[in-house]
Length: 590
Image (cartoon, rainbow, N blue to C red; front, side, top):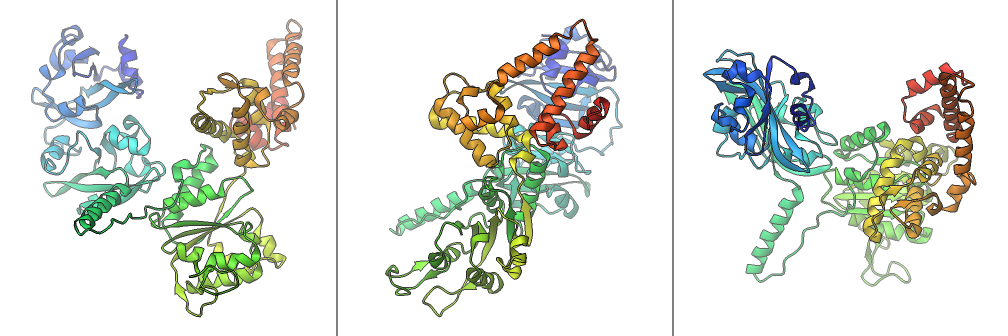
């Protein structure tokens, strides 16, 4: 295999270094033997590349503490390397093939540094100073320099973020965590105080971490963090086991701690469009507070999924998550369902009474779907809970204190309901402390591909099939449809196709009839006729005019499919909005 190909196996940007005369690049196998290298070894070691190939790198270079990090595939940068009592700076990125670590690429700068230069974080200092509390080889580990730049991270840590270690090295710590709380490593550096066993949200999941300041000669030289539990619920399970053992000794039946009732978290929200990325980031920010949230969106956009995700990312995640559809319960039963009742409260009441949804949600979250369907009388009672944080069960005179966060959802504009007198204005403002608008699917068509892929994978598991995806014609139909039922309708479309699909791919014929009718009776014939019409122009017009005509047709069809919405048309064509406008101007399409 060519040297350049081996280097690029890291999927890291070493392109600028391949032909550099200022960097010695060494390709290593899993046993740290030299597979290939460039001519930088002449200047450093006085050896030709051919003399090094097949030898272990530590036979020629004193690696010291870096040897173990190289062998275990750690990714690091800006680390000192001593060669003949001279200090050079190196960086390392592992090579991954078929998901396995098979070596790496070591890049060594040929510029020698003063021996007393301490501006960089030296991993040797870290290994020595933290040997009693840290195993850099196996735990999820990350290390930053005094400026907060990541100088080392292993794949175990990157896996918690769903990322690659080589993509994180060199980034500032406050910009390296997707779907996560901001790192506290800069705070630890500033205060000089370690934080042991702290919960932290990484990629929407709560983990348990430790953070250590790194001090040398009284000066902060960085900070180190490690993940000690990949899920905070592991700690709860351990505590449960310990309590169960204690109770068993006391011959008492063990009790199971409630771990939370949410079914989804932030990672369950599928979509890579700009609006969805922004929405996920907003959810992680607002979830930490206890303010009430109003979710607004059309039917089928996934408001309940978002409610689960908010609860899962909040401090109440280990409390109950109770959901209630205000439109599904008859008006005369809604009050008893929400607030509960005591024994004998009304004819037909259960003996002993019943606990209401709000009381069940104590110290947790209650999700009130279709809040707009609640009667004005019920709205007044709900307002009292919001204001007084207490409720009174039916048939009782005793009030009960409740600590509940309310997430309400609606598919109508509550401002209009307030104006019509159908919804209390004071309740509206109590619920609308933080409003999140969930966009319909037609406004984020670029997410259709990811949603369909997710549904295909899900139904493959459920149906025991191995469907690979959709044929191009079926994709065209899916992308051109506007989905009035939003994600719920898209899911139903894929499920319907799975019931009739034959073969590895979903065909046009497998899609529901209403989608095929919207797309036209014979799109294949129309496409063929369209292509033939352009082929007939060969020899009559120059290629540039033919391509302009074809591009014009595509732009006009895209605009037609999205009712003239230029942003959606650009997304449908897979181009940027500025690029779309340039093409409209060039082809004089109004």
